[in-house]
Length: 466
Image 1: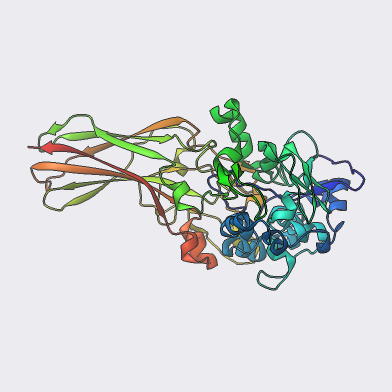
Image 2: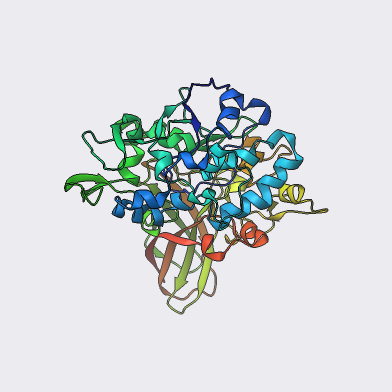
């Protein structure tokens, strides 16, 4: 971890305006720095301000009505109050921070991006969501619109710089408000603005969140298409009720992994057989091609340790018989983590964190059927066990995710069974996405609507059996 220098009256903050990732809630383990490596600026920022230094969202909503309503519906406004984030922080992060010095920084650091006002006010850990604390503001208007830059060259681990007060920052010149002074801040229109919370290093120095870095390496980043272009698209309207109509008001949608419209088609799939006609007893070769043609970062992104994206193939004949088809192995290192197995266990560090004796772990792949291909980046704890605790991540496995504007082909070899009927056979390829491994979610009591699978895309093909 780097040391940060203190600037007078201008200190690192913890927020982000944008969901720069598809997958993108702000996971509770974010910015878990080592307490020994926080640096003077980080220590000063923690508790340097008070809640009263920042406007309440309701005050902003008085004039910025449409923007406020959009923000209320986005995960940005629920970064602290969202059920999974609450469970991850209070049931896992805080207990672990209190017993393991290496990850002690998580107790404060989670709030750097999930409850930045609480972090800046030193209210750590904050009261439980729903207690009426300003921590419930999550990432709100006045956090983002007081940002003036970042410390250092690379955005990560909540290294924003804030300067709260009556001056609000925005991208548009010439804006006049009866409540505050407005100045132009070009930094708010950059991807680096988002990266301060959408890039993260663990206390072990591992990039456990790298959505902004993925963007910089991809075609959209190289073309100058920034996070805001997808997650805050412009539309005609008024930014404030008293303002003049404008052709390009940035919509504060922040739609990502919790928005079914954003998820729809984020990965496209097409499937085809090698031939269109087969005799009984033949072996059929099928190929499914999956494409990330929509997201400007890898899919899944963000907290990739807890995301599950998989493709499922099923064949059906005219008599109603159905068969699940398992993916062919490719033989690359670490492939075992990308093919679903009902027998594989993982997440044993949950037992360490919660003080459970003889905890054997949980089903690694949850509800994903045996043999389905999973697109994931495995995270490993210091003992080499797969983990969903990003702050406890000491190493990464093989990255088998879909990069922007790239495709991957998966093959399936199927010996036609004796019971298949002559006539057409339909093969359906379906891509599913879950925001959290189902076995972990059920173990920790996460509401089902937060992890139940979402269908991303679907395609069918046919061949004849004679």
